[in-house]
Amino acid sequence: MKRVLLKLSGEALSGKKKSGYDEETVQDVVRQIKELSDMGLQISVVIGGGNFWRGRTSEDMDRVKADHIGMLATIMNCIYVSDMMRIEGVKTRIMTPFYCGNMTELFSRDRAIECLEAGEIIFFAGGTGHPFFSTDTATILRAVETNSQCVLMAKAVDGVYDSDPKKNPKAKKYDFMPMSDVIEKKLGVIDTAAAALAIENKMPVRVFALKKTDSIIKSINNNFKGTYLNCV
Image (cartoon, rainbow, N blue to C red; front, side, top):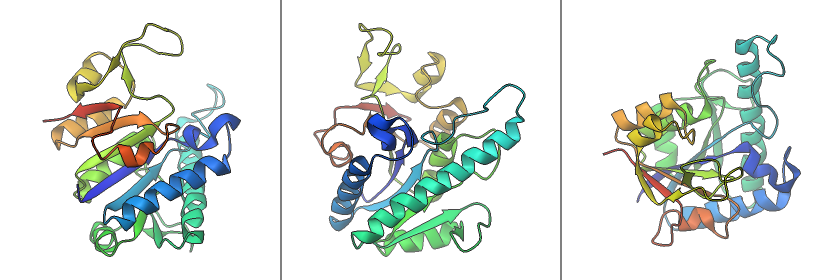
């Protein structure tokens, strides 16, 4: 593979803390991304905001405003991880679909591809810039726009199961699954809009657990132990 988009869940970055950041976890993510970049892989990153904000705090809260807060949470995460990478000598860039002062720059497809080809790590923050769309949808959208070959989706669980493995100890894990089955079985590993966009654009997704040793590195080689979602 030449170019991939890595999707990190905010919850995974918080480690055992369940909120905020677990510095050891983030440092390990940075190490793996740097190693892959040094090997010549072009990498962009989307980070969820679940370590700070998940949906509305109550049913009375306006959904649009809640989603706005979620977008800001993803920007916070990207600024943090991006700076951790800067400390390690990796050149990064944060792009958002809306103006965010001098903290980020406005997303441009051509500019993003140009920077990826120059070896920079690009963080796509702020989701799609619109409410009612998750970071999953933003992930597939940016992957398609930048001609990525695969989406690497790092989660708290090690793949796709037929039911919640936390609630069902007998849940069956899939090594391979058509993306269409994710929609039909309502497995919830990726939202419906994102799955449909992936199918339409034949964008494969590899789902794996971030906490596993060298999981990001292994996600692109023969040691991959997660679930491969095929969209062909």
